[in-house]
Each structure stands twice: as structure tokens, then as C-alpha cells.
Image 1: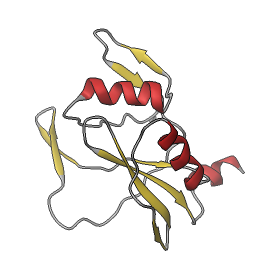
Image 2: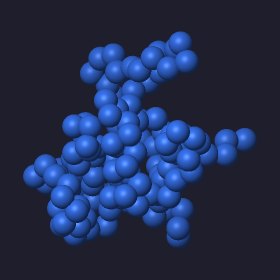
Image 3: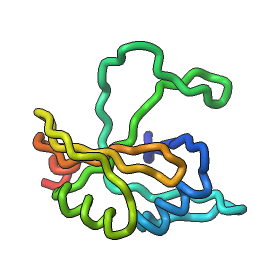
Length: 128
């Protein structure tokens, strides 16, 4: 049976981005040695979206489906304010039918998504 999920985030500066997840987002982690951190994630859900072309990453000699990381929050404005107080830049929020979203710039220059959903989530469904 499936016991969990392991999300891979590819970075041009993994040490800096690991430090961001550890110190700014305060995600708990285990150190596998030499600063190689594995982070605990908040409860998660998976959505399968249609693609507009090849979106793959080679891993273990296989072309694997690409993915995006969006962290979910209950109050986007508050989280943006907290991140700003820690010196983290976020893009201007964008409203869509599925929620309000922004992107968070990591130290490597890459970005991850952050959003406040307006739809019911599986996280909510599981907690009721």
C-alpha cells in the first residue's frame, strides 16, 4: 500500500533553497548527511491538470512527469506579510476562479506557488 509521497524540487542553488525551507518556512527536516535535508510537508493533495506540451524531468534514467509546488494557506495576505517581514519577495496576488495566488521567490531565483483556495480541498474533506 502507498505510505506517503516524496516531492522533488530541482534547484540551481539547493543549499540556499534548503536553508529557506528550514529557516524561513520552518519546515521540520532530517539531515541525511552533508546538509542534504529531507523536509516534512504540510498535508497535501494532488491535482492532475492538462498540459500544453512536454513537461518532464529526467530522473533515474526515466522521463518523469513534471510538477509544480503550490503551498496552501488560509489567509494569503497574512502569509505574504509574514514572508515580507522575513525579507522574502512575493509576486502581486492574482485572483482566479479557483483562488488567490502568488509566487514566492526562493534564494536560487526559482519560484514556488502559494495560494488561498476558494474551492473545497481534499485536506478539508479529510478533516471532516
